[in-house]
Length: 74
Image (cartoon, rainbow, N blue to C red; front, side):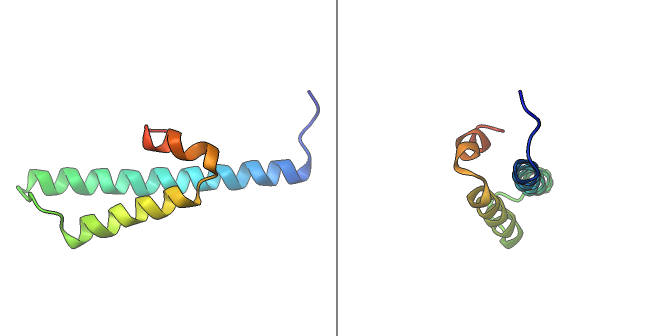
């Protein structure tokens, strides 16, 4: 196997950043959901909607080959 080129490394780094962004957004949504559930909140709050939209936006930024895996817990 040959050494990756500078361009390939840049692509890998960008993909890793996008995956990390998705994980951060997903974790923030999960933490908020747990907090709201513990507080007895049973409706979608504006904060929940904002965080959920952040997850959807982060997922859209993922390369196509990662999107299906993201929905299953990448």
